[in-house]
Length: 131
Ligand SMILES: Nc1nc2c([nH]c(=O)n2[C@@H]2O[C@H](COP(=O)(O)OP(=O)(O)OP(=O)(O)O)[C@@H](O)[C@H]2O)c(=O)[nH]1
Ligand SMILES: [Mg+2]
Image (cartoon, rainbow, N blue to C red; front, side, top):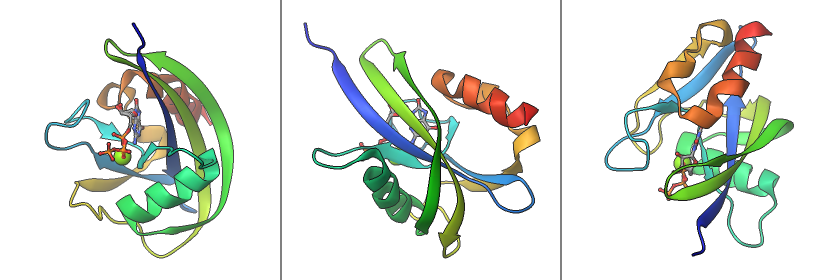
C-alpha cells in the first residue's frame, strides 16, 4: 500500500517584537481546531521556497521578501506522511491577515503553546520558546 506523502512549506512570520503570526485550522480540514503556521502543500514543479511564497500570498496576503529554512522534518500521521519545511520569515511586504477567513493572532514566540499545534510542530515551537 502506498501512503500519501505530502511536502509542506510553512512560514513562521515574525515581527520586530518577537511575535509570530498564527492561524487556526477551520472546518473539516485535517487537524481542524488546531493553530498552525500558515502554509501548505508544495505543488509539482515548485521548490519549497516557491511553495512558501505562493501559500503565504494565498493564505495571508503577504509577499515574502526573504526566508530562512529553520528546520525540516518528517512526520507519520495515521493516514499520511508529511515532510514539513519550517521557514523563518522576517521580511515581507503587506500586512498578514487570515485571507481565507481563518482566525488569526500574533503571539510572542515565548508564549507559543505547543499543545495548540499539530504534533510535528513541537520541536520547532520548543526552539522558538527557548530562543
Ligand atoms: N500549514 C500548516 N500545515 C501543517 C502544520 N503542521 C502540520 O502538521 N501541518 C500539516 O500539513 C498538511 C498540509 O497543510 P495544509 O492543509 O495547510 O495544506 P494546503 O494549504 O495546501 O491545503 P488545501 O489542501 O486545503 O489546499 C496538513 O496535513 C497539516 O496538518 C503547520 O504548522 N502549518
Ligand atoms: Mg494551508
